[in-house]
Length: 265
Image (cartoon, rainbow, N blue to C red; front, side):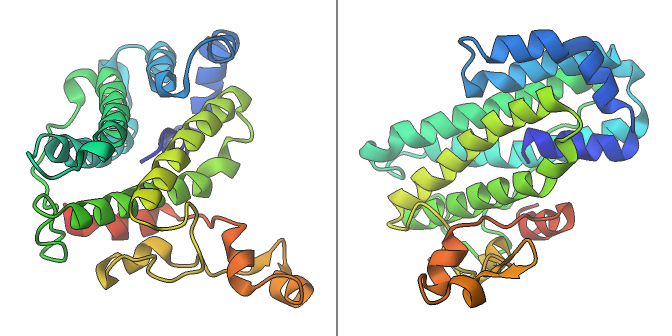
């Protein structure tokens, strides 16, 4: 789960969340992120803002705790996935190890962010099924399978982010942070797709080289209607349908994201 998605979910249970964050963090947060802070450091800055906004974890409303713990569950899923892979001898070819170690570190930062906000109310890390109930039986024995699951996770993350971006329009500093994080997540997805011999971007709504079990990851990516205009009808004589779908990433709702990751839980 991306951080902007977390804040959107928080807004559903706490309509004042953006007011809280703006009050305590608007100037400091924004200025720190426009200096030398790299995108990967943004979650740590956000952790500080959240703690300041809500105070100690014991004061968090239960519904907020529930949302954050759901996000933490998903971050546990991704972090452990890359941690196991990077510690599995012979799984990741040497030329790709730096890329997957970099992604692992990002996911670790996200886990620490959520746990720092939740404190003693954070859920413990459960066990995960990275075979997705048998759909990927050799995830940590076959690099191609591991990379395919990684692509599914990263492409899902990018689309989940987009699904919540509009809800951050009333919180400019948070949106600024979210855009930086989104860029990092998109870079992860493009790198993994490149490693798998895929284009760096999604083409149509097809499987993108993934098995049928991952079909939900690309549901709706074949959309050609943007802003109410059918772009195939308008531009079809100049661009192929694939080219038009490549030009846009489509959003995922929270329910769609849950459906995608449930087999791994």
